[in-house]
Length: 339
Image (cartoon, rainbow, N blue to C red; front, side, top):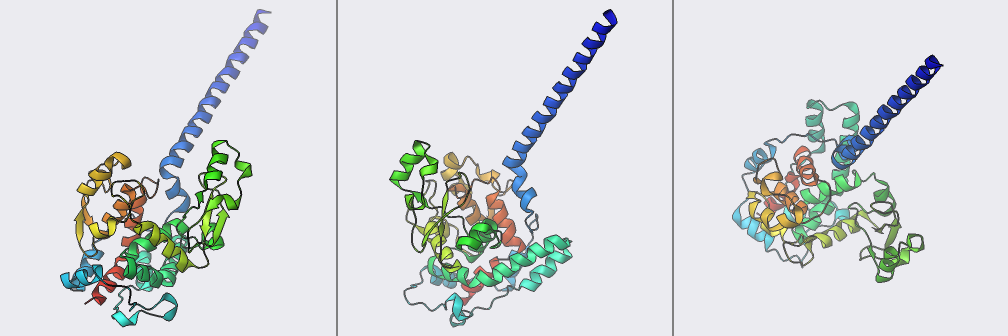
C-alpha cells in the first residue's frame, strides 16, 4: 500500500515537473516569437540583398564627377518646371538636360558577387537591379519636378514592394503601401467594431488613385489605393512627401528636401531634436552615434523622424539600399545635368 502510494506520488511529481518545463518551453517560444516579430523578423524573413556595411563609393563618385557646383544646385532647387524639359519615362532617356548617367546595373551585380553573395541573394539582387532599371526614369522625373531625390524614392519602392514583387504591387501598382482613408461613416463602423460591414465605398482615395484594394496589414479591413500604372504610384507618393504641412508634426515630410539638399553631408542633430518628442529617437541613435551623414541618409532619417514607418531600422535600410545599389549616382547625374 505504502509502495503504491509512493509510486503514485512520484509519478504525479514527474508529470507535474514535465508540465512545468513544457510550460516554460512554450512561454520561451512565445517570448522569442514576440522578440523576433518586434526586432528581427523583417531581416530574417526578407533577407534583403544588401550589404550591411557602408562604403566610400558615394564620396569617391562625387569627387570623380568633379563635385556639384553651387550654380547647379541653385538652378535645380529654383527651377521652373512649368516648361518640362525632361522627357517622360515612356519617351526614352532624358537627353534634353544632358544626363551623363554613371549607374550601371551590371557593375552593381559584379560588386555584390565579389562581396560573396550566394546564388539566392544574387537572384534577389538581380530583381532589385531590374526594378531600378525599369523605374529610374519615373523616379528622376519626380525628382526633377518636386525635388525628392530619385535615390530615396527608389529605395522606398524597393523596400515597400520588394522590388515590385509584392502582391499589393502586382495587383494594384501600389509600390509604396499607401493606404486609403476611412470615411466618417466608416470610422463609426470601426469604433463600433462592425468590421464585417465595411465595404470599398467606405474608403477614400486620392487621384491619381482609381480605387481601393482590400489587403491585410495592421487590420483585416484595411484598404490600399490602386493605380493604373507604376508612374501614377510614384506621383501619388510624391504628393504624400511634398504636401504643405507644419514641420515637427508626425506625417509632415515636405521640409526634408530643402533641409538636406543633394550632394553634400548634413548634420541631423537639430531636425532630430525637433522631432524627438514624437519619434522617441535622439540624434545620436539614428546611425550608431554618427550625426553628420550623406544627404540621402539625412533624408532617410528625416522620414523616420516624421513617422513615415514603424520599423525601428527603416532609415538604416534605406541608407544601406542606396549605398549598396549606388542610387546616389542617379541624383548626381540629374544635378550635373543642371550644369
